[in-house]
Length: 121
Length: 109
Image (tube, rainbow over all chains, first blue to last red; front, side):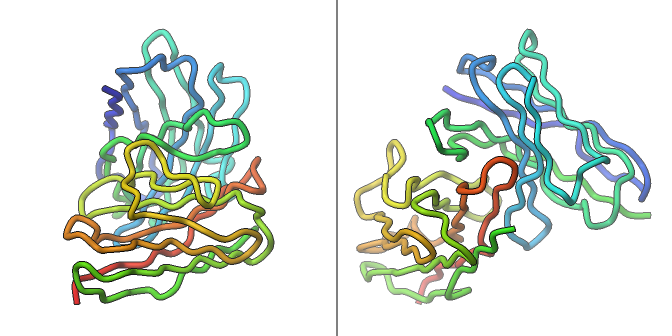
């Protein structure tokens, strides 16, 4: 059974940092591209970042570029999101999402349960 | 950036009735469109990709159609477990950007 379990969320002050983790199991993690998607309270979904299976290709949404860093450790079946210079508008549930691995389609077939990040003084 | 607009924001439907949800793209996304279902307190679930292909395990009462800028998700006969928020997502201009619509909440009438 595919499982994605996020951790690391919490309350942080504006300008602060936080590192999110996503532990993957039930599939060959090193074969899949991975993403972070977030959802502000009561709002819709926003794609945040992508990393290829090897980690060699990375993309970010403009809203987080230069502040967030995605990474992965295939030996540990883990995905990470280092978040720096946090702003109030970064407050959201952050989901780890697996790419469906379909040619020509960047869609998300498995999601974690999410971890809440609250940026407030 | 491609903007995805979903309508209506809220759809009130009785169990057993048909629900039709719309998603419009600000420019053509070909058939590079997916639909997700999200229930309160849960992560989204993939329903449809390629505008009309059901994901694994998705019941046949869910169907998607459209191409270019206009898309529709149809739930042929609403079951109690179908009351949720539905999001469309385009992946045509990937990389580097993916965008979601604002969602349609399907509620019990």
